[in-house]
Amino acid sequence: MASKKVHFLEQSTRVHSAESTLYAGSTSNLRTNVKPSTVHLGPRTNEPDTEINSNPSTRLLDQSYPRYSAIGIPADGQSTDPEESEQRVVEIFINRCNTFLEWYRDSVIEFRNSFSMHVVHLLFAHIPISAIILGWLFNRTCPHTPILPTFMTVVGAVSVVFMGIWIAVSCCEHSGTPCSNRQKLAVGMLSMPILICMVIEMFLVAHLSPNFDPTAEYYCSKMFYSFVICKEVVSAAAIIIAALFYFPGSGLHCCWPNCSFLSRGRAFYIRV
Image (cartoon, rainbow, N blue to C red; front, side):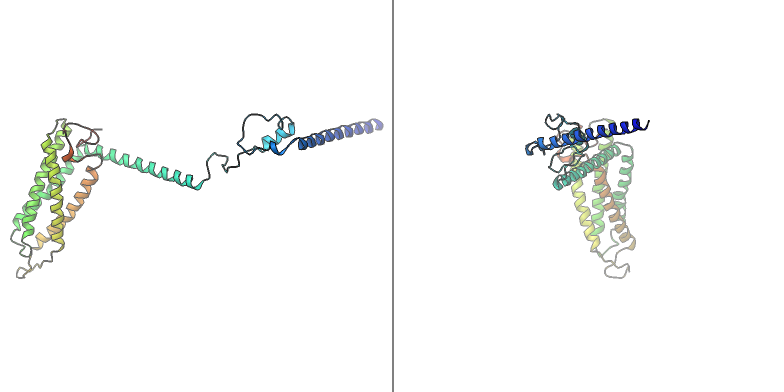
């Protein structure tokens, strides 16, 4: 029984020695067969290499440590070049800005096409109407700057005409009735003079230092002066709001060859 165990152990030792010798021989053959010309630095390909991949140990090493290009491209395929990374960031920023601008333009156009725009027209119409009334009432109560009440009355009257034409054009567009080219030309011709007159009016108010004593030389009514200050603030806010809600998606009134031609660049109100 003991002799059989010794015989079995000797046989196992011989088998392991033979396997070790075979593996060492394969490794030595691999080292002798691999030449400098067989080292590849190019990108990894799916075609098997008949000279190197024929050995099982080489295939195991190739699966564990795949060959990549030596250009400096990481495993995810994205380049590590700083210029390309910066360009990619700029493109993402530009795309996000364009997306926001398109959303803002579409939202403004939808608001202009809704009934809420008529409410804005009515709110804006109170400014020139109040300017006409108070400018006429306090025409002689500001001797320090007598031109200011008259100037404000004239600007208010022109603004009322402008608002009337603007509301008429808006109603025509919403009802589907083509407006006339003269209406839109009038809106375009009146908008710029009104804006210039409002700037001049703000300049006069900024240089006004009145005295509220009726017996003083530079007397001006406190009520009129307070109204003028409030009017200028509200007018400036109205101009900003009108610019934000009007210019996106619109064209210039005086440059439209055809009033009834509705397009994204020419229509006064664009239907969405």
